[in-house]
Length: 192
Image 1 (cartoon, rainbow, N blue to C red):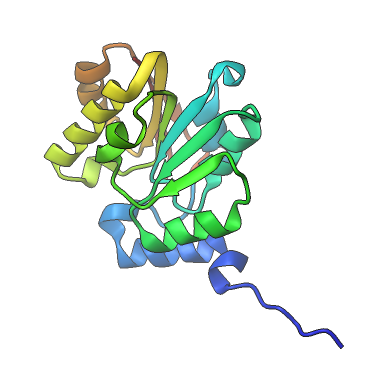
Image 2: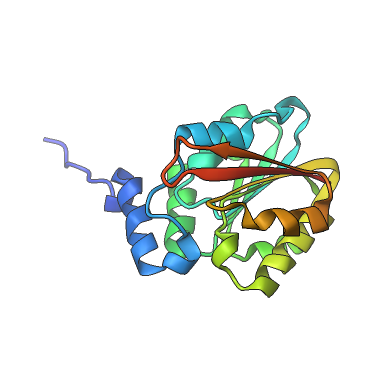
């Protein structure tokens, strides 16, 4: 008889891990449940994935957006995920077996130091509206400095309040509403 193997609770139930981390850190996780598939689709729409070499992702959580981005990326592209929460970072590193993915347990503020050759797409699930203004400003400035010419920064929020700050940093920003998420979300797409 072969010994039975059991998956770690987090590996078996990412939604439970997400909820636990939200309850432990609501000011850094920002939502009780992961993003819906319609929200993920809207976040990733309009990107020419055949031209993308480097993607950065801020706040990937349990990897809902990460997995969808990897499914669209070229075999030679890379995705660098910035995840401060050590449980989420460990979960991502252990649950996604893809050599194109690198998980960094550091703040998105440091993106320029970790992506010296720039990126084509930056994706964010960070709760900008509840983070300190100086941290939010530093992340947006670092992202703008890291994006290659024509690159895109796509982010979602639960309110349109981020729009003026995005326009101040990026200039060209579109906003769309996605009602098929809980809570409903606004998806921003900014160009470098």
